[in-house]
Structure formats: C-alpha cells, structure tokens
Image 1 (spheres, rainbow, N blue to C red):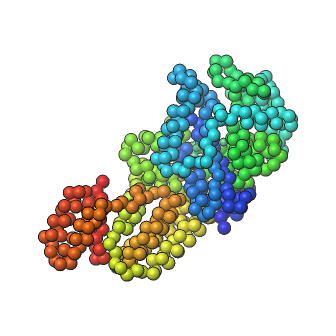
Image 2 (cartoon, helix red, strand yellow):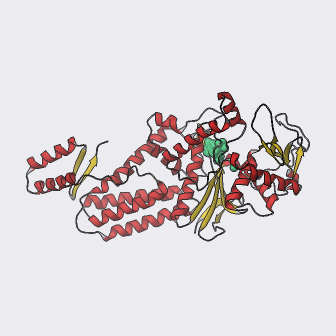
Image 3 (cartoon, helix red, strand yellow):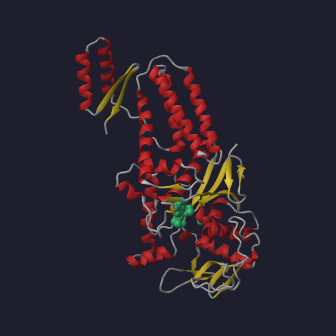
Length: 463
Ligand code: AMP
Ligand code: ZN
C-alpha cells in the first residue's frame, strides 16, 4: 500500500490513481531565464524519485513538466541581450536539459513550452469569461476569487481580511479586488512580446499556463501535482481556482510539495544570491552523482540545509557504495550460499516499504546499507558463491532504477587480462610468486589493481 502526504487534505493518504496501473502526474517546471540552482533541483530530484519509484512498483507514469518561456524575466533577459525571446529561452532550455541529464533526472513524457500553448490558454480564459469567473479590466483579464468559494483550501490561507478594493502599488493593472490574479496581460508595446488572439492582444499570466498545459496532456482531473512548498500559494491555489471553475470538476487528487533547500537556514534562491548552480559545484570538482544523492537522501518534506561539508559526505557515501558494487567482480567460490537470496528479498521488501510510506527514503537507504554490511560479512568469511555475486549485482542494479547512483555499470576487462588474472591465481596456488608478481606488475601498468582475498582475486581499474 502506497501512501502520500496530500497537501490538500493535510493527511497521509493511501494512493489510488484514477486509472488502474497508470499515474498521471504534473510538475511545475523551470522559468528559463537563467541556470536553475540546486534548490530548484531539490524539487526536480524529489519529483524524479517519485516518478521512478512509481514505475519501479509497476505503474506506468505519464508525466508533464512545463517550461515557462515567457514572463517578465525572460522578456527582460532577451531585451538586454538584444536577441529574440526564443533564442534566449532556447539557450536556457538546453542548459536545463543538460543539467537534468547530469543529475540523471528522467525526462517527463511531455515538456510543453508556454509559448506553444497560447491557443489552449486562450480557450481556457474564454471559458472563464463565459462562465463569469473572469473579467476585463482595461485589456487585461482577471480571475475573480470571490466567485470561487473553495479558494484557500490548499494553502489554508484566509483572504477574508484582505480588503476588497484596496490598492497595492505593485499591481501593474487595476483590478476589482486586490486578491484577484491576472489571467491575461494586456500587450505592452515596448516589450514587443504579445499574441493577437480572440481575447485581445497580450500574453498569458503564469498560473493559467499550468492549468492549460496540465489538462491538455493529462485530462481535466489527474492524479498527482507536485512542486516546491513556495508554489502552494498563490500558484497552485490559483491553478485549482481556474481549472475547477472552468471544468466544474476536481482538478487534482494528490498534491505533493517538497520543502526547501536552505543555506544557513534560509531558502536558497536567486533573489537572495545564496545559490549554487549545478555548474558552480561541478567547476569545484564535486561529483554530480553525489549532488543527486545529497538531494535525494533527505526526506522531501524536511528542509535540507546545504553545505559543502554535507556534499563531501555524500561523495564518500557514493564512493563506498560504488566500491561495494564494483567489488562484486570477485572470482568467488563455486558454492552458492542460499542465505544471500533471503537477504536480498528482505532488503528489497524494506526498500519498497520505506518509499511506499510517503517516500521515506531514509528507511529505504538504511535497509540497503544494512544489507551491504551483512553481505560484506559473508564476503569476508568466504561464504559467497559465484551465483551470489550475480544475485547481489542484479539487486543493486535493480534498485538503481530508482536511486541512480551507480557510477558505472559493471566494468569489464578484455578477455586477455581476465585470463592473466586466472593464470596468476594458478601461479599463486603453485607458489610461483615470481610469476604471480610479474603478472600483477604488468596489470598495474595497464591501470588494473589486484586485491587478493581468501576467496579469490578482485580487480579494480585506476581512474
Ligand atoms: P521557479 O523557477 O522559481 O518557479 O522554481 C522551480 C521549482 O523549484 C519550483 O517547484 C519551486 O518550488 C522549486 N524551488 C525553488 N527554490 C527552491 C528551494 N530553495 N528548495 C526547493 N525547491 C525550490
Ligand atoms: Zn505551475
């Protein structure tokens, strides 16, 4: 039984998708005006874990992540460089996709761009106008929050003490109620970015983007919507209001939000300047797999304080884990140990049990580390057969479909080197240590280190 904490109901709930065996999931994606920082990637790594885990336990996941490629920041960035909006955002989309690859984030099935879905947004806004949920003020269009009684259910925000009609200086456009939010922004000639549409000349607001694109690809009601906690209000609250007003149906069944990545107790963010991009960390020679591991290994609803020290610790963990995996190239004994299979079954069960409980990754990881500890004991006692090597290797590769922290799949050696290792083992048995050392030195020159254990010889490539 899988359970998730649903921000909407504020409870951990059993998870049942609408359609058996299929999960439809939406993720708020990046605004492509700059490099994403690792705070953003905490959200994407959490969503990746969720995606991969659901697949691991047998669901087909249909997932959408939008790309916000038109807003104040992208327009400003393009203007500053004197290039088109498309040219500007294409560049940051490319970087984002590269970063996703580096962090081993699974590509969602659809990554729709806002600018390619203006038609869908216009249709949705028209529907809201027709049904009386939206109104024009000048040539901009607003959503009227007073028409949606459920407003605030997701975030628990109480807007009743915000005075209707109050004016807020930062509002660019006049609206009837200060709480209302913009659906469509009137064209500003100096920006030069607008669409001629049946609702007027302008560009969409941010919130309508996610409603239009999620419903286009996933239907009017879908299973899971994710984001960081900062998205809950107003963004997701507004998505619910627009979507449910337009369709008269429930928009999303499960809302999952991750806590922030912090720096010295404060949210990592562009505006505070306390951020690292992935590239900042790579240029300091940090291992990207360790960055993934660090972001992955804390529970998604717990704030995570980022320090370079914790990243170094993550590097060590990833290194040890991979050494264990790479060390499984042992020439083990012929005798199979049936207990190993039981250990694997136990570890797999705990791994799934942890993640099924609202993605309790700490539980899952500790079951894996315990497993490794136990296996190493069998190793050191020589109670480990050839078949066991394969079983353990298969298991580590199996859970790596979720964790993705194996550095390299099994390294192989050319047959001639493997033959030499065997020849050397024979030589050792015959007490021909001169020959054995000769082979060891030869392989060392080729970048292969040998380690003799009571139950066979392991090899390792030097990087
Ligand atoms: P943005 O580009 O600001 O819309 O953010 C993209 C995603 O990153 C959203 O899901 C945000 O909630 C999330 N996010 C932004 N900053 C952080 C942070 N410091 N920690 C975790 N998630 C974040
Ligand atoms: Zn969104």
